[in-house]
Amino acid sequence: MSPEALSRQLTLPAATTLVVGQVIAVGIFLTPGTIIRTLASPLWVLGIWTLVGGMAICGALCYGALAARYPEAGGGYVYLREAYGPRVAFLYGWKCFLIMDPGITAALATGFAAYAGSLLPLNSVALRAVAILAIVALAIVHILGLRVGTRIVTALTALKLALILGLIGIALVSSSGAWQNFVPFVSRRSTAPPLGPAIATALMSAFFAFGGWWEVTKMSGEVRDPGRTMPRALVRGLAAVTLIYMLITLAFMYVVPIEQVSAGEAFVSQVGTALLGPSGAIAVTLVVLACILGSLAVVMMLAARAYFAMARDGVFPAAAAAVHPRFGTPTRAIAAQALVACVLVALGTFESIVAYFIFITVVFIALTVAAVFVVRRRDTSLTVPGHPWTALIFLAIVGVLLVLMLLNNPLQALLGVAIVSLGAPVYRIIQRPAAAPAGTHQEVQP
Image 1 (cartoon, rainbow, N blue to C red):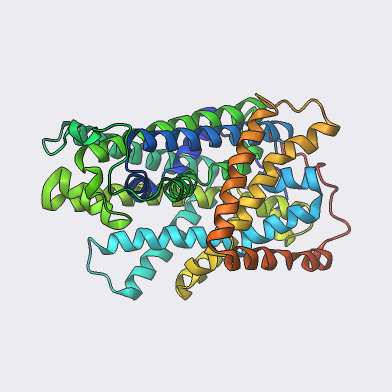
Image 2 (cartoon, one colour):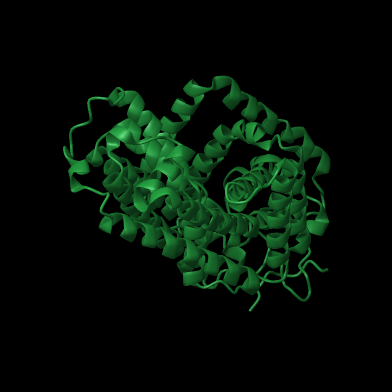
């Protein structure tokens, strides 16, 4: 292994595929039920998807501009480092490596195993083995090279989109559906909860359904012409996701009347049964499995790039900066993330732990978008489409979300912030004085 440069192989279609593959996971089946049931109006449902989709695109324009200005591996870690200094960036990376990245990896792998367990007779030990096997298999794929990993991700994303679009088509021609389910189109149903709490619940659900698009910028060091590719990939990918979410929600409302909509996993079975009868739940479960596996593949590809960047800054073990001489991938960084995720799966206590760090994660996302103001003060060459309104719109809606999250569970939110803050003394201890100055890395390899 040697600390060489990562090669730029990702094209615009590949980067766009990563955005779609990262965002569309099991939430596409679980979230619409909650949004439909709480808003109880087709117009309000479409409105919330439009609002959150537009918000995500505003944030993506900011991330894309930062990716164009700092076209290196690491994504949010790099942008926070350049805007606020290495300490804040380290706290973000510290949180990602210890909790969020392996926790989300473990959650997706466990979710994949759980849905597989609904089709096969698997006990608890076998379910954990399936989850660990999925993590190990995908880690090996990503270690073997960016081209191999990209092909797998592209294939899984194409499969999930084909299955989702097929499901939408089946729903819209189903004899069990009725356009009457959209009437009244504007007025909310009499069984609907109060509008204020309903909007709050739907807003948080929709935001998390779009979660993860910002992670794709971690691949900026491996994208061809990142100044043009990353902004376009983010916007195109999110526009496609918004459209798909709207279509599948409309399809679900077409086959299941709003008054009968369930929430969570029950909604998956409800839609499947409405479409295809008793065997429909199995068919929809197979679609869910494809969605989860595709997202797991993307998450495992993206996460390691932040540790790679941290290692080059001297705030992470130096071995993580090594690039395999044959495969051209940050092998040890990928292996480290997979190992921690496998340990969390084996322990089986990660879901409650991860929940404590969602609030601080959203704070870091807001700080990253706000970084465009900080960077532009000293570098007017940073161009953000629609500036300053794109950033302000995103930050305004995120501010509302943070208030809602804080009010919903203040202890959980504040404890997560406190634990991440403990990384500050760790930063002082492990920082290597000989590390290269921030922003000096040259990762371009023809």
